[in-house]
Length: 118
Picture (cartoon, rainbow, N blue to C red):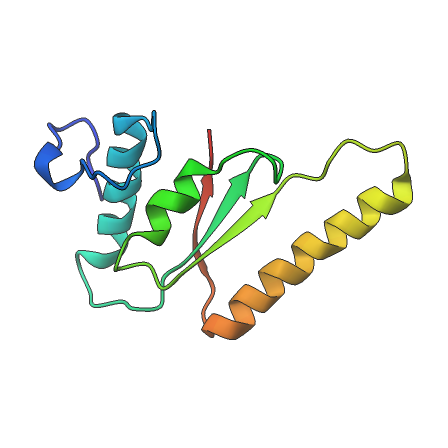
């Protein structure tokens, strides 16, 4: 259980490597989520799926999570581009499913968390 309403330990959260304009509150929430997985045990198999915007948009949540030592793998799932073609949308959806399957197979663990990027 992580209480994000408590005063965060800001000195442990702020990092010069954060993407420009990254929201401190969002990083606190991500850090508390990671702590919730790792505080009671020594898990090293944490796999996090991040739902991102299109591939042309930055996915800050992925960038922050990839910098966490306690996260074994981050898989960024990008939305499909708007398309007039049902075939291209279907291909995109299949690629997302394959990306998730590969991440689970490669890490030999289930998805521990799903994060929706802002």
